[in-house]
Length: 520
Image: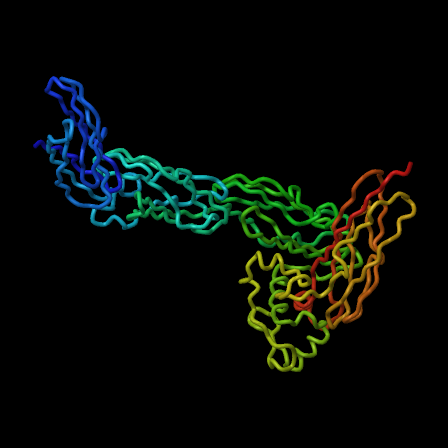
């Protein structure tokens, strides 16, 4: 009897040592192998010529983990009456695979299901970072079909394109994992596992990463142009900065061709860790207070808001100069639902003790039953994205109900074949306040769009009909504009600072479209 050792083999894998048999006789000798379970001889039978030899491959394919010490029988001769015995020794055990971060083999043979953590840290939105996980094979044979999988859904920001592979004996296989984040500020977590053949056990790797985007800020939140004489232009500068290394695009949501406020670069590209200086102008068309809250849209960031304000005087008309503090007081009064009342009523309520001034000079209710219930003052805590979509009209819930609105938000003249015969489009201005409101349209001279009447007083809780006119000056052109109206509550009884705090000094918008077509 002789012994053949198959050494150690992973369960469900095959080990094939070689063995030789010899025919020492002068006759041709047939042979046949009888082998126990989990072993096989190749060839299992055959015929040896005189003085010839044959190489036999011993195949060991275990399906259970145990120590094998068995006997294989080789029968030879014409009737198989002669026998030779071969002792087969082998050990079968489960494959030993571990999954870890490169350079950090924290999992041991006794803790195969513990987790290592592969961190991608901060990755720019929609860019791709790649790192590797390592699969360690502590078995003396190569292990194939080691599958890598994820527990997450298909929408995971992590991906692994290598689903299976071969890990060399006592070696390591590196598998790339990519991270492509899609939402700024979100931390993504996923789990990757390596399964052995038969899914006997799994090693798990935890992957983490967060998505970073641009971080844009404005140098000023309020820009006051002060008092300007009609016909003159006030100028100022302001910086817009991106402190993140992720580049982005910005756009101020304002039609500078029609507005009294102008930004020289209302939209553009802002590189990572860069600053751009913007030039702004205030060119009033009427002796009034002008105020507009402009949204600055940032790609992959919530919008920012810039308050622009200025006052225009003439030799005969000198309205109270609008200051940033008046805007702050107005927002507080608006949160208390007091801006829908005209100044004369507020003055009476203040004199009768139904209203009082707080420490900042804003109006507040003394008795909550004399007017509408007092609401929480939370304007400074409103998310900018919530404020942007809260237009007071299309939104279900509004923080600041509108005081004056237009009956339509968009007017379209379509094609206009006859330049001198374009029918004006009607719309209405609606006053939701309990006081009379004066409205002034501030279209630029030479604009193809104009509104009549140019100035108008709207009675409390009433609407007034207006008409929009379109006079194009070039053929085959598409015209579009955003018209501004500045409105304020008419009345007296409060000193100028308080009066400005109760006036509704906002801007309304109409998106206007028209096209001049050539005939013939």
